[in-house]
Length: 298
Image (tube, rainbow, N blue to C red; front, side, top):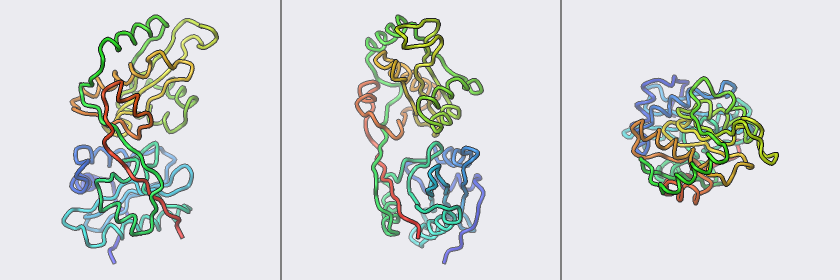
């Protein structure tokens, strides 16, 4: 039986994640740091083997379900039952914190992936061998950077926004309270937290005019963020009353331009809903597929 003990989310775990997660080696260390700095109310822990050749992040979601957020085993140590022992220890921790269900699924707003990337076949096999059922499929889209889009359409969008009295601006860190309040009111606390934590945040607002009762003076109309989950784009949203103005396309392109300026050659658009929007707006393609698993804890 492999011993599993509490661990610190330090540089050793960052290196372990980079070695084990071959499809995410570029940002594995950033993901470890992100998971180690979740919302203050979250219950979470890291468990590892004594010699740190395997580790698991686990947490409790807002609905009380337990989550396996990240599991990593050194390539040379794989096939020895370490992954199975890590999951077992995570499940025991979940039970101790009142969870009745365990999931291999992202725990928004602070998550690594929506679920198990299908390319990590051993992880999917491990989940299924332990009785987890696949209950949902999620996907990411990839946009090459600099983003490709129709310049004439973009100029038309900007002209439409200007004619409607809409301004687009960046919200620096520490100056995001109004945007976060808008996101919380229109969507939920999870997206608001991501907006506040993001590397880049852009928003659209209508200043000084009130047309047909649809907008109040200075009302925020939409937002887009990137880097809340390291290096990924999202979340993004436009108020229902402002849809059709091109707000989303303009905000998306602003964020992707900022990511390109930061040195990224591509951007992951995480946990995508509207495939057609991103495909048409920036030539994004569906690429990463994730299986979400769950099982009842006895």
